[in-house]
Length: 399
Image (cartoon, rainbow, N blue to C red):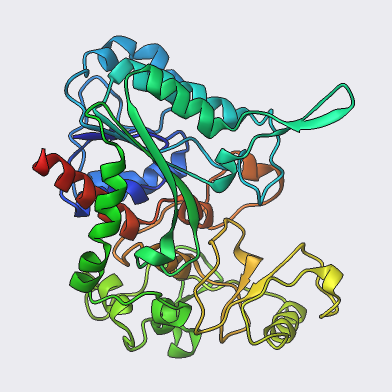
C-alpha cells in the first residue's frame, strides 16, 4: 500500500499500478492535473482504495496536514511506501531558480507528512537542481547555501531512515528522452542501497520482456503519429485538427498502443495552428544541423528566432528532457511542434491514458495553471516508475 504526494497527472502511480502495487490515495493541488489522475486511476481502473475521511478531490498538502492530522497519524504501520517529491520548478536549473519561490517551502510540508504517517519506505524524485544550493550574497560575497537534497537526507536520517540517493538518466531505462533526475530512496529496514542495486540489475530483463532495446529514438517513439497519416476534426477543441494513427513501425509504438482498438482516434493528438511565418521559421531551423542541438538567437544561425531557444529533433536521436513549453521542440520531420500525445509517448505514457483540461497556457498563468502539456512534462515517466515498483516488490519479497 502506498500514498502518492504531489501526484500530478498520475505518472508515478500508473507505473506502480502496472508493477502490482495498490494505492491508498493521491495528493494533488491542481484541479486539471487531479482530473486526469482521477479519470484514469480512480474512475477507469479503481486503483486507489481511498479512505472515507478524505475527500476525493484536488487538495493542497497543507490542507490535509491541518484538517486531517489525526487521520494521518492513525495510518502509522499501514503504509509501506510514500512516493513523490515537491514541484520542481523552483529548483530547476532551466528556470529562474529563485530561493524564495513559494513552491520550495513544500519541502517542509513533505517532511511533516513523513513524520505524521511514518511510512516504511520513501521514493523521492526531483530535478538535478534540487542538489544544488541557491546563490546567496553576504558581506559582498556570493556563496551557495546548503542544497535541499542534503537538508532532506539529514532530516530523514534523524527520523530513523537509512538513505541512499543517485542520479538516473531515463533513456537508460527505455524512456526515449535524456531526462536526468535526482532519485532518493529511504527505508527504516536498513540497506537503502539495495534498491538501486535491484533497479539496475533487473533493468535489462525488464526491457527484454517488453521487447525494447535502448536507446529508443524519437521516430521509434512517435513515428506512427505523423501528420502525413491524416487528420480529423478535434473532438475537444473547435477549429483544430487531430491526428490519426499510422502503421506501427517499432516495438515501442506497439507497446504504447497495446490497449488501443482499431479505428480509435489518438487522445490529445491535436495539432497547433501556427502562422505561415512560424512554419517557415521552423523549416529553416530544421535545416541548421544534422544533430538535435538547441538553437538560440545569439548563434545568429536563423533570422527571426525570438524565443530564448528551440531544439529541432532528429529522427535517430533521443529526445532531450520534455518541457512544459510546447515550442521548445520542433518535430523531426514536420515543421510543427509536437502534440500532447507525442510528448506523452516520449514520457512513456501508454495511449489509453487520457489527458484532461486546457492544452496550454502562458504568462503569469503558468504559476498556477497546469494544462495538458505541463501535466505530461511534470510527470515521472510511467515506464520508469513501473521498474521502480517491481524493484521495490522484489526487495520486500526477499525480506
